[in-house]
Amino acid sequence: MSNIEKLLEQNKVWAESMTERDPEFFKRLSDQQNPDFLWIGCSDSRVPANQIIDLPPGEVFVHRNVANLIHYNDMNALSVIQYAVDVLKVEHIMIVGHYGCGGVRASITGGDNGMVDYWLHTLRELYNLHYDELKDLPLDEQVDRMCELNVRSQVQNLARTKILQRAWERGQKLEVHGWVYGLSDGRVNNLDCTISNLSQVPQLYRVDRIEPLPQQD
Image (cartoon, rainbow, N blue to C red):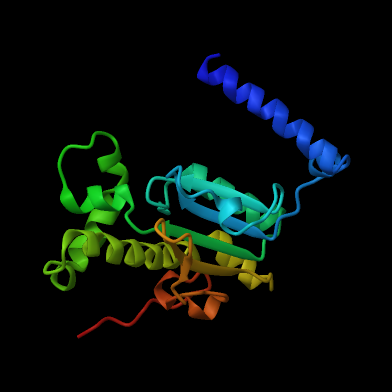
């Protein structure tokens, strides 16, 4: 049996076992999805969203990419976010990095990694911004610290999008949280960087800013 045939057989066994335990499971799942959560995480295969927070299918809307980045020109991510916010009306968005992230490590160590280097460019700039505070740490600690800094940065990036700000303007309940998952213990570290309303967005990035900011002397 080939690897693909094995996967198909496993799917058959899984579907049958789910139906045996709950005959209405797939009917409920096919009728409608109504999740309260959007998970924006890393593509790493060791970080499965539903399993980490112990929720069944249909409870978490998921978008994943290398190093859990929010780029303002990424139509894929922005489309997912807009659908989750405007249509599904999720109440919580979790941006979830993980310690030991390979994308973060690549942004620190350099080298020629192909196309992914373009994707990681903003992460490399973030590392450069914090270089003085990180340079004397062992590499593994630099990576883990950068995983946290990256999540905090992506929470800020997401809050600066018009998608979220328009939702807050119309009074929609919506919070953005920053988490980092530990591969070694399965625990989520809440970075306590939640943004839940427009007033927490710097004035420069707000959609309701009318007057230009005063020039600095």
